[in-house]
Length: 286
Image (cartoon, rainbow, N blue to C red; front, side):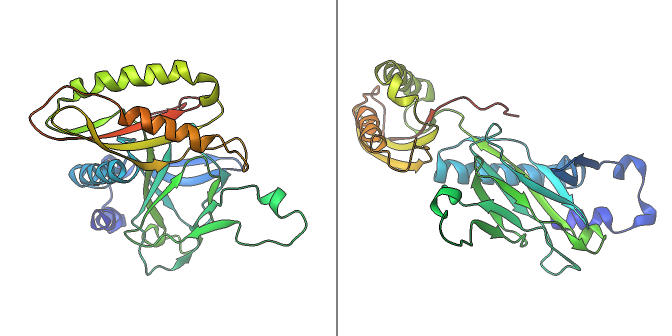
């Protein structure tokens, strides 16, 4: 993919409107300043598709999230930056995949991600540092982060050559229902799960309304239909306060209810990844 980008910019005098008038200068006062485009206008579409599928497989395995937005290709050259913001309405996790050259005649472009917690209240009477993570845009680095965390991109300084700029594919991961693999048909697996979630919504509606985020469980369903194993894959549920003591028991209750599910018989084992979401739905999914 980096080779495609280098080929795109290699011959300035050979560039033509139909192949190179593809970049949008995205400027939002006080927030964004960068160049962006649909990646398939610069990179071979089959390479972008391969990246998306590889990322989807990794997101399912590690987070239980099967939904992925088609990425943007963004370029930051001298003067470009992003100020602090979050993407809580756009996804559960953001992804940034760097195609930035490790050797470049520019500096900056680091991603700054605020650490979770109450930085103000915890540090009222003491000096503090390290309030955010700094992630350099190294070549071939994939960064995943909770979309609710405020994040920014430090200003790029130096060369105006696009090949020296911060170049990344980026987008969002979100839930897309259960992921079923194995002997049991997805439709057959979905029915008991849907009935369980409806029951949970009624039984624990008041308690569940206090939380926001997602809990992903990984199940192994035996051929006889019983759940042989139920484990937590990812827990990104935000609690009302640091001293909250109710989420642990409620989480265990949910796990126990899922572990007690009965599925139709099948010819063999089935693996199911189940994301359970809490709070308001996402504003945008593209």
